[in-house]
Image (cartoon, rainbow, N blue to C red; front, top):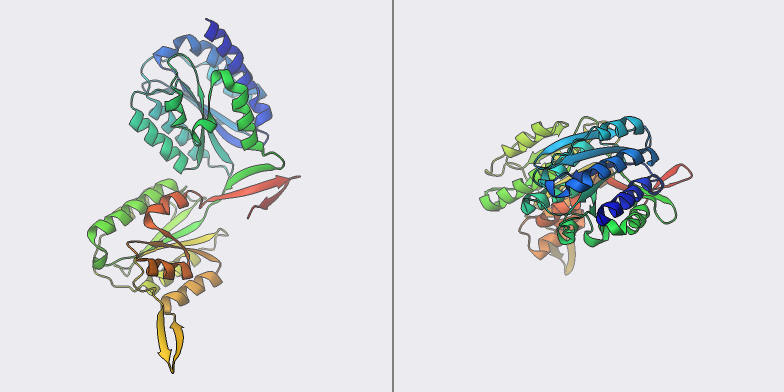
Length: 398
């Protein structure tokens, strides 16, 4: 009962202080563990969440809050809401499930809630749990997928059977974003610094882009490398926020004269990319890049234009010619297309597959170059801008 009383006080402090911590608008989902081991804590947890929601800075243009209650499955949830009173009423209706600990299911539901609204504000998840789960591998995977979609995960560990090691493995920054319930003030000190900034109010806004993958392959690439490329592109599609008012994605591939035009439907683009096969080259690198440029310029949307050129670099080389003892570099058509992209304010990423150092060096000359294995990590920042808001004026950080 000592822990129970302490939990009531500290959980009250946790929820009560969010109103002051989250001065900037965010989308926030609480994920509450309803497994049988936590039965004694559940009534007070729900009461505290419900009573103190009124103190969070909730509103249509302010913070939106949702709640997920899970056990073996999602037993109840509240989608992101901007009405504190309705939210509180819904939370009071929660019933303790008291079964197993499928934390992966709770995290996945929270991500679903956060990504459906898709406001241009930071997305946060606070996992209130003992840290343990019945399937650690699946839970860790769901955590990684959530973070790949831009969800910032924080953890608050509750008794009994608390495993901080497991909880820390699920948060975005490990022990820096995982706290025991006894250290709730420290938790909100860190949370406040992240959501408000030490001086200016700093927020991360997501903005849609028009993106075309220019895939430069041939039978020389090899089936295994081709499958690696396709798996990476499909994973990229899972990370991106694709939709009519969000990111649009297209694909140009060197083994086909037809391309996948910019699509706003995730299922359509995913299915189209999944059906691509390796065959003989019919387009050279410059033609692939040129078609990608034409595709991304075909839309009149006022959003950033981006091309990701995936290539082994065969047609990007610069050549050195000697005439009368003088050396000069020859830049081929691919370099000319890269220059055209720059002139049109198109951001060009060059992704090397099995490239030798020299070829990656050439790739660097025409693009922001990286290796295939690093693409998904870098892609996570593609739709996000760090923005400083001062006196209501918004400026982009360089």
